[in-house]
Length: 197
Length: 197
Image 1 (tube, rainbow over the protein chains, first blue to last red):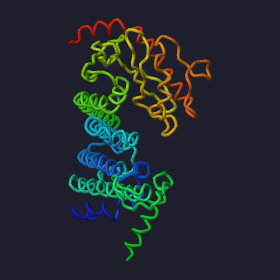
Image 2: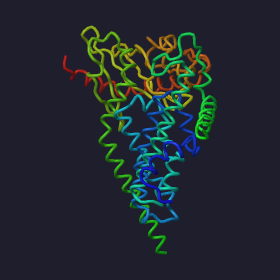
Image 3: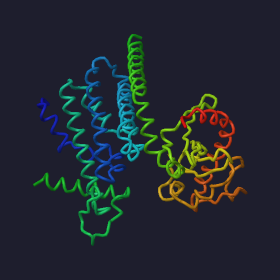
Image 4: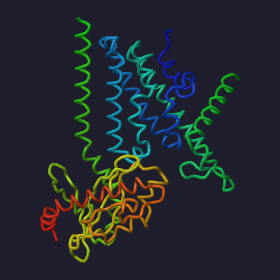
């Protein structure tokens, strides 16, 4: 079990990358990954919450009584989510409007709660920090990639830059909810193929 | 028993810390959030309604108290007179609360224009209340004393096709606005006289 800090960090980037390998946090992953910008914005917000909640849960793991641990996790997570919500409203209002209801929904994101329960509650501060950072970055990358694929296939452009040439007919199915499942499945398939060699 | 007390104490401490931090952050960010709301949601509607104004309505604004509620009033200067004002009222649409900015000619008590600010209506259907020019134009020159209702309910307002509930929501906001206007008009006139000419 004794993994190095670097291993705790890097596992989140490939071996346990959230929406693909852990198949957790699907709701925001499918909901906001319509464009790359939204995906990355959501990923960063989640990463912040994940790191902060992992730190606090790990620090207080000896004080928090086992029987009410989930309640304590939720209080900690909800505090940071509300914090993010307020900060986003104050400084990145446009992104806040686009992400809308998915920001408060980070509270019930299984990635965040899952890491608190499965990792931070049993590990020391530094590994928990590395874990939160790794999983968070992995989640951000995954949402960004998913958003990129969907945006390019669904609208033919990314950040307003046309990538597919003018003869490309936008495959709008990809930016709708069912398209998200298909994109996720295909990307997971691709990851498995690469992983097997 | 000791375990129970421990649980209660820890949950209490955790919750009060969480509440304290959030209250502080909310206090700090409140001004910025108000500014952002003004910039991204209200400003476009105000600018559209007061397109002929020679001043900057966003600068010439003041707050009027309606009981305990604050109402922001934006004043437009046309023909060297502060005759036009806009303020916001709330209505209930299909997807929840929506804000409607209403422009009024103070001398004639007539509507000079309306614009939807915040809403969570269905994109492409109810959201047309924000963009549909014909829908918005029908309110111009109506007196802000009458009761507004859609044609289905025996009123004079044409609904947006497919978005009856949204159209009714706009009427609710207008009815609220006319009641509000009656209450705060004396106060508005007083404040306008205090504005630098």
